[in-house]
Length: 435
Image (cartoon, rainbow, N blue to C red; front, side, top):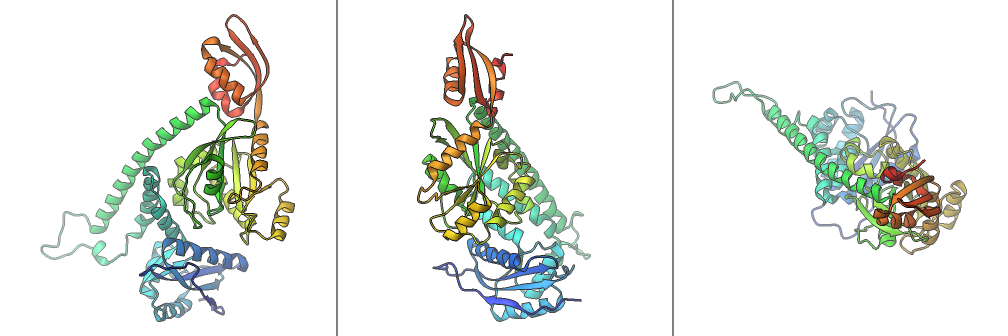
């Protein structure tokens, strides 16, 4: 039986100005299950409203439903579904967006009851990524995730997709329309996976070249809209698109920055994370997220103005664990301190004394951030003894730039050097290591 809870609904005021003509009118539905925090469920619905607006729809209304467990057929139960369907039709809703993951069967049943499109959080995020991916690699990754999501949802889109006719002229070559659609999607998935393998090889070659060059790699990670692209532009002079919108950056960017001691580092701006980032996306973006796994340091940017920064931190670290990057050293950075409440900033700094407060927009705290990055990269240096032939004068000059040289002397064969070098440089220096 359905659990009938008092309606927890409030009318949404438009948070996006100059709404485009013809935008879909969206009704948001969240389900708080037993054992889950009500405040967290409300915050998740707030975020769903921002995601919906980013996708191009107007979040008109919302409802938080409380249940002990999901209903297998409709997720929210028959009684609550009847109530919300009537409410949606009265408001001429175009799309219903669930903050929970729906099974294909639940989605079909809900669409029939609401009489309009019903999507879940995963489909919404995939749609936003599809809008923002512009590079060839990004577009392939997003299409791959979309196809994997839609493949199990083909069934039930109408009897014409899953049934063959029994009369004369209706018999085909023995393959139903549904089977044809599924086969075409699987072939397309295979083709995209092959293309992605080739692009991954190219990216691996680039990473290998950077390892040989021994330039430390710093990955910018954080919740979506935390300000990573703004920080990248400030530190490197790049012109990456920055918008006050969720997932404005989908395509990864790598740029060079200079530390106060004169060393170069490579900064990589990755896709923003979010609570319950769809597993399909994590799988599809495996090759680009490799940049994060192989970084020497992660600068974890957190929006200090967010009402739940600790929730953002936990969500990002959950994704880092999923992509097996939790072992990479992390520097926590609280951004947007120029716009944050002073009491909130003091609280964050007290809880996370190792963190660096900055404003990427105003440039506040950037010098301290670069000093901390340099210090953390230095802590990852290892002592080595090298014998470098005179023919590799270029390598000698590079070592003077990236390493801490302790002893340097010359003999007949070349230069003997004792130095502390970044751990990332060991692969390229292997032929010259001496005991």
